[in-house]
Picture 1 (cartoon, rainbow, N blue to C red):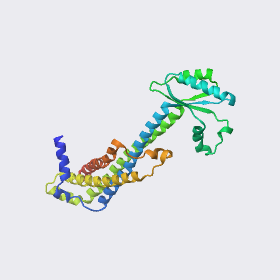
Picture 2: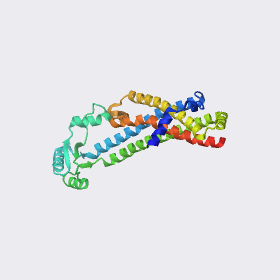
Picture 3: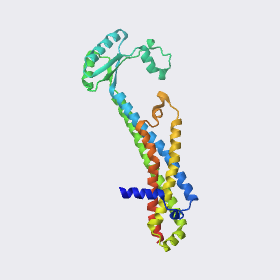
Picture 4: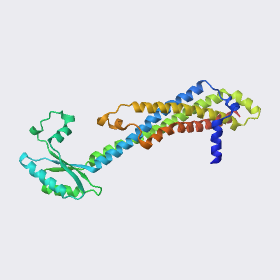
Length: 301
């Protein structure tokens, strides 16, 4: 560990003589800085997407797993009796809690997004809805269905399982997409830094030959390139990550209808993730430059 810390310290301090080996300006500098900034900007959004999808999946799973609905369709003369019977059955069912029959205003609010605010419920054969929740111990949906079939023939139990599964799968797919995009972003950054390092090494072939003649080792030459490209990637990624955070903060809140955009951002400990983007970009640049330097210096030997 001590030796590793010493190497990191040497990388940050650098060597003025070795730094002159690497061109301080030019195409490779711009390519490294712009690539690191762009990829860090995209990485922040990929992280926000992955984390927001994870929170969305947890919220959907928790809300839908605990809720259920009983729908009663019956003639107007039978409706009150069947609703009372259904409420009695639910109250006697272990694992069922928070039982409530939705009144006309609550049902109108549920239908308003599809039919508008002036829906005449009293003139339409709208089923009566009874919402309830399950306790941590849960209830037996099959047993409840059998009892309802016997005592309340017009009742249909919806435990939200058929709604929960596709929503959970969609959220999990979004989360996987976010992490996959993050891996591709850092892979692309590694490829761009490799291209820039190859170009810089090839452009300085004569300088490298002279350094070898005066006794410079390949490790010394490679270290100069590794340090310069790592610090350039770190600086570019820090700028890109900062811009990404600003852009995410400025994303408008879509409200309750915003879906995943409502939770797009970082909460609590999630703020550690974008902070790690610049160091990860620097690590990718370090590994890519080291591999490129070893390969090119081997070819120039």
